[in-house]
Length: 196
Image 1 (cartoon, rainbow, N blue to C red):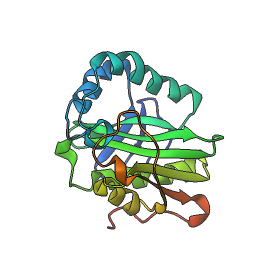
Image 2 (spheres, rainbow, N blue to C red; image 1 turned 180 degrees about the vertical axis):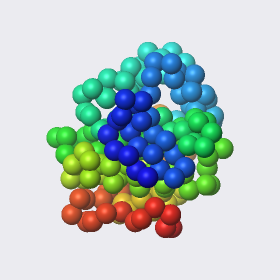
Image 3 (cartoon, rainbow, N blue to C red; image 1 turned 90 degrees about the vertical axis):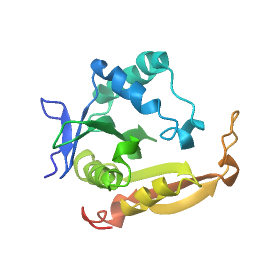
């Protein structure tokens, strides 16, 4: 079952194994814990953890504000449907002139290797096109982040380009560049859930 737009319980959608719900002001510890794992942050900050104050005072307020400004888009807490366990987050961040959304995901290591990133990403891509009505979903990652690239491909996105932005504090692998993937509404729906 895939349920669209946020209901009164804050749930955006559900898949076979995932429930994506709005974050709340009480979720600071969940986000801090997620960003405290150097492996989770490896391709984002080189493994540096996000300080609690940054999560509490910057990241979470920005996440919460997005729900009112761009209904159906934003960052969503991912829970395992069977247990309610927090697994991480998925995002459809608004971009461009409002007709595009950037797909993102960050999951705890315990959730890796189970196909959950692909399951959640496919559901959000369908939601972006069918419910929100965007014309393009795109995603970027480091070229060397092969796991994230595989998720993008399994979610139906196609490779667009490799580019080399300049960073003040480059992390290992930056020299290989960043990659961008996209799926346009005119490309048709992403692969059905459960396919690989």
